[in-house]
Every structure is written in C-alpha cells, then in structure tokens.
Length: 69
Image 1 (tube, rainbow, N blue to C red):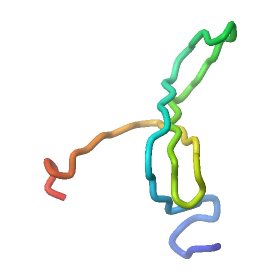
Image 2 (image 1 turned 60 degrees about the vertical axis):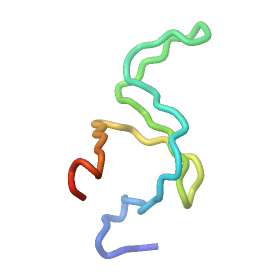
Image 3 (image 1 turned 120 degrees about the vertical axis):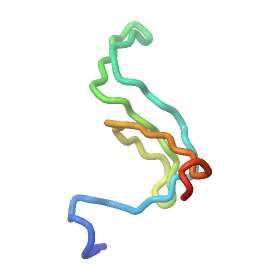
C-alpha cells in the first residue's frame, strides 16, 4: 500500500493496544551472556501486525488531561 503523505520506507499508522515490555539501553548480564544495547527497545502489541519491537531514541510520557488536548 502506498500513501502520498508517507515516505516509501515508513509503515503505519498502527494502533498500539498494549505494552509488552521495555528493554533499557546499556550492558547487562543475562544467563551467562553479556547483552549490549545502544538504544532502548519497546515491545508493543499493535493492530494490525501483532507484537512489534521498536527502538526508542526518546520517550516522552504525556497526560492529555494536563496538556489540554
């Protein structure tokens, strides 16, 4: 599917239904292995598509009741 307003490498829009997990950036020891993540990752359940893992360069949480939106 091609949309005139989006570049060809952009997919979406997706509706995020729930958060599965947050994987922070950094170095971690897990099960005897060393994990090195440059960016934080977020796993979310979306419609359509199911679970997706996206890199989070910057996370901003916002309460719409306080911002007047």
